[in-house]
Image (tube, rainbow, N blue to C red; front, side, top):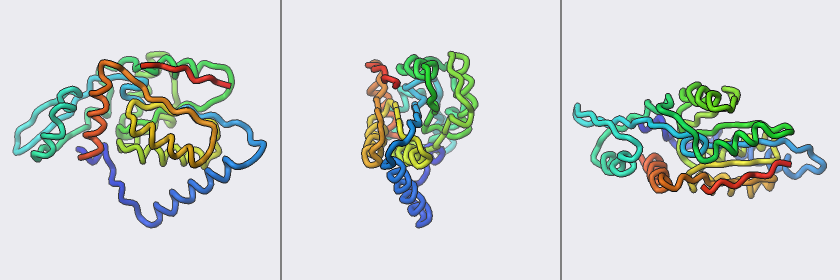
Length: 231
């Protein structure tokens, strides 16, 4: 259901305090002098390092229809407004998976000399992590299962909060890539406040760029590839 992809943004007082404490700790660590570089490289999955042909299932009054990503982008908002219930459970697997526009960049970073921690940060549910790991490994990039983070939330705020939590763990050299502009902007804004070394990049598949933006927009409401210089 839609709630699987979009957790409520209402936070309890304790959750708000925790988020503020993470930001304070992240800023404090960033301001330390003579700190050793601790690199983290974070990639979105869908239309960033991977592609798939997963389906969205819609149901209303006993009637069921199946939508591919293109059909959902075109009709999804209208169907939701008309009372259709959306089921995104198919996104817990990866159907007909392939390489996204920044896959080769991720592989280059993974294979480069030096130490850096690689993460996948996706709006998909946590249950999707094993399928994502299997696909990436088959294509030549093996990332630990625990480093594949399914947020179950497609908002930029959710991704930015996770990035801040990693800064609070001591990471001070960030790269983040996502196909959705709102996610890229949210993360960049968060990193600007923390004031750590960072680069963010929007992944683009020219044929599907508008489709991907529309898809993310609907989920929230109810390529040129530039090599990041490692040093």
